[in-house]
Image (cartoon, rainbow, N blue to C red; front, side):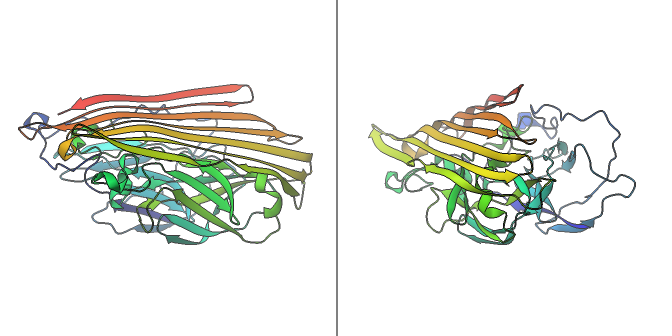
Length: 438
């Protein structure tokens, strides 16, 4: 039996630049289409399946919903795939909110809600969490500012280990809009020194073990203009996917049966500033032919963190240009029942942006690109041998203007793209959105 927690929390109002809270234009009426996304349908294996309802609850406030769940006796595991179906309904005057679902202290879903019409709308999300031998929560979690700490105890015969971090900047004022913050010397309304670059790091026993770009999450009230997202939300808005880190090179020292210290750290957040939520869990694959897997870290190379933001003034315009990059490479060796297995993981992340705003932050414009490339090579024996590459890219180009009649216009294009190759398979996905809404 597991404990289920479903929760909701508030998001800050507004978006890039100053918030301009206005009523929907008359032409919007009181009803519009249900929001939809460009996400492809979730594939399901052609085998017998079963469906079990785990939550049916209406939120009237920010109190969590807590229940228990026991897997149905008539549909025992192991299962080839588990797909979570979230269906929601909302109406009236509601701002965007974050919600999440955990089972046994492991997060299965993180989402944001749409802003509805007066008559009401429905929406849905269908994530499919990956399957592993064990899914491990973070023990004794504690937060300090934007950092999360705790411990994890890995099964002794673990031969592959991933971490999943559901990282969001939210509920902490300007950290919801971290990607458009500017050095305090510029006078911008969302200050952050040294600038807008953020990087989500995972540390094991104090050693940097994973780096990643968080990518922006633009919620349904984002960029000062909820009207923009009524029907087509921004990429990832309804299914806030976790950042995945391959920690297999570090397994050798972790399989001793002891609790090991874990820290999730967000680079670039001003000291003492809250506003980041980084719940983490671990996916472990065991070696069924071994009581204990042993090994060691072979190499660990951390590149210099480049994080440069320069500010200048051109006439009445302020311009902040940012360039950031970081790299991490690690290799580890394991003694398994399949023989010696070596894993090499190479991670490279980067961000380039130009933020320009005029007097009174009108107009307010950002053009930015984030990249996150990872390579994992496993050689030796066993089921995980092979080469996996992923290349992720997120681009955002948006402008907010307010005219003399106090009419706000948001023009924005967004691209959330990625390619992944594993063995002989290749996947390419791109979620593109372009819109202008007065």
